[in-house]
Each structure stands twice: as structure tokens, then as C-alpha cells.
Image (cartoon, rainbow, N blue to C red):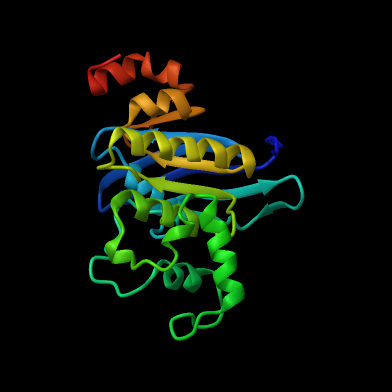
Length: 239
């Protein structure tokens, strides 16, 4: 089991974004350290999804996003991403096909590569999904698809894993399993995790840091600090 080195950090510095004259993000800065789970919360329209798009490089923005490591200083960041929704309703792909397209330089749809197949199956095993490797993704349950997407997003393990409300619609048991998996990943692989979520009950238990957005950072700290703040009470009406 690895320990957090404490010296690797994704630095999101002074991110601002406007849509026309409307300010969507206003000078947002946060640091996400390895071996930690940082959660972003906020009301609808607070800028959460826009911030994720900025980090993923999907929109032009002011400010910078830098990854620093103790080995080689600043360099381009490697990001794993699990979206809120993935439309696979009519997809003919199997889990092997989908995963293989991410981790192999050669086509995987026509003939199974035995080495790639075994590597994918071994990685899926960490997420309790190895038995799904030959299943069609269109036939997976919500929880099964989420586990498969988590596995794919960590092939190979990234500097930063971004999760956009990944457990909407799951039952309580599924949510507990998901957050337990996140806790294991951050420890075993010294992984930095950034999650957008409204599951406050689980964030209290599993998040190391909470960032509350309302176009800018209006509160930040430990779950206890943010959930007991006036800003949180004014926004969500609960403490």
C-alpha cells in the first residue's frame, strides 16, 4: 500500500470564463494533491460543469492548469474522466472492445489480442468487473457500467481522476461501494480525485476537501468546515 507523497499537485490557477458578457467562472483557484479526494459542490448554474470542461481543455479560458511532480517538475497533466452519462444504448461493443480501444494501438474489434485481453481483465478485476469483459456495454446495469468506466479511466492510472456526478441513480449499497472504491484507489495508487457530487452524506465520510462554487470559490476546507459554514446554509438551507 502506497502512502501519499504529498509533493504531486494539480494547480488550477485563476480560472475565469465568460459566455458573452455573462460571467460563468470568476478567478477560481484550487490545488488538488495526490492521495486525496476533493469534491466540488454548488447549486445549479454555479459553474461546476464549466470548471470541469476548462480542466479537460474543452473550452478556452483565462488562467492556467499545471501539474507538478517531485520527479520532473511541471509537465502536461494526465487526466482520467468519468462523465455523468454515457450513451451506449445501441452500442454493439463489448467491454473488451471499449477498453481495448483506449489501451491498444491496434484494432481490437475484429480479433482478440490475447495479451491485451488478459491485461484488461486483470485491470477490471480491481473494480470487481472482470466477469463483464465479454458483455455488451449496452446490456450493463448502471452500476456495472460505472465500474467499467472507472476501470477505463484509470488505464493507465492518471495524475488526476475527474468524476462528474458518477453515481446518480444508484441505490445506497451501490453508492457505498463506489465511495469505498475511490478511497481504496487514492491510497493504493496515490491518486488525486476531483468529484462533482451532491451526495453530502458520503462526502462527509470520504472527501478530504470540499470546494463550494458560486461562479467563484465561496467556501473551502474540510467537509466539517464547509458543511457547517454560513455559505453552505444559505445555499442549501441545511447544516
